[in-house]
Length: 299
Ligand code: MG
Image (cartoon, rainbow, N blue to C red; front, side):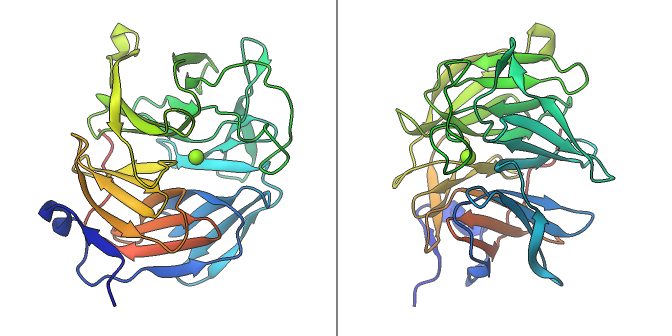
């Protein structure tokens, strides 16, 4: 029986563990998203958006409910202090979970108008929170609650969590979705699950030059689509969700190989006690596979 990995470029074999099997850790979700590894508790937290809940998995405890209701939370990440930062669909806000469990709102409006439904996010080394705001949580009652967009556009934002200042960093995506930085933070990758359905790479100008984005170009176009959420490894390779699993691209956009999942994948995350587990949220299930690669350290 063929394994779950498919090598398309010999460099892929350095990133995976030969013979590694794909493990199904949990099922019963409707649309699993937002995986984030919590190093202190050695727990993987993820979102089950339509079921309005978040789940947790650990090697010892298996799967359990983490938060319910969850405000239709989607993407999750950790900030510089290791706190959980999340994108919520309904209401459409960005939240932070404090060490005592209190959930506070970091952003809810742009120029006085409600955000659509923040989808995915990443924290830069300077503490700023970058997130995408497509309409998936307001198009219907499936992943939130249907309503008109007050902003009338789907932007990518940079949030200063101290001041609450919100800045539009990209206004030319149809439905911006996943977002991650290269290890040196000179490049930001953003996927578009609208039209065209692809991933873009953009240059990040230094903060003292405004931190603006430039040189927007197509980076990759996973087939079958789509790139939803993704992560970047220590060598700068981009591990993105796709219609048939996870696709791994070099920084120049060369497809190295795939990890096939039995269900459409939405996102992935490096974690596990040694950092060499790739967790994959794929439709109803949470999967894991041992890999040789590991997450990019923060600059
Ligand atoms: Mg997403």
